[in-house]
Length: 110
Length: 114
Image 1 (cartoon, rainbow over the protein chains, first blue to last red):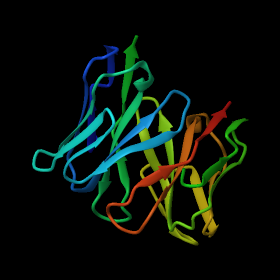
Image 2: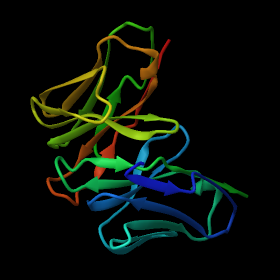
Image 3: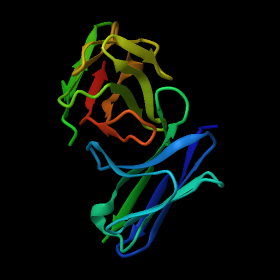
Image 4: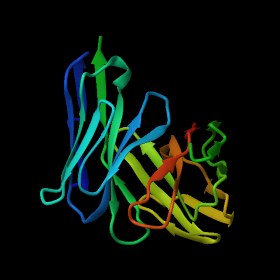
């Protein structure tokens, strides 16, 4: 079992819909990251959080430490939001290594 | 943009040949990482470095070696490339020295081993 699990693996929605991507982890972490990767593109950090909620434009990330669960929400989704979204956890021990979920491929149709 | 470049950006090589990928940073960060990204596996850590000449293995280090002779450069070497090493390779740096530091990724190198 992966230490970081994401769901769903694939998500297709219509423009304007509210999107939720979930991430669960099974290890002790110091931070939870949400990353975005456009097709053929590099990896960009969207959020890093250790508690509560963060908001940036139409994107909201939340984390529940007790339940070891995080969500990424996109409000008023747009085709340009189509990308792979990756959840990653900074493991407490050692060299602050990141452990990654397998990613969620999001497609927003116009 | 954390000043990270990777070279080459694309490479096609044949099985059994040596390959070296270079990661260069301009901000003197201590920690650098090499990952590979494969369908169905996501990103996996190959090796990382926590200073000049200080490196350690990640979860998929077999078949790879690294070197860091100066702060700005972290080299990943495939001594004898195999088809299973066809992948997209990302370098990353960690900005800072604490548990809440972000990692920033290079643009990636697409390697094809025929």
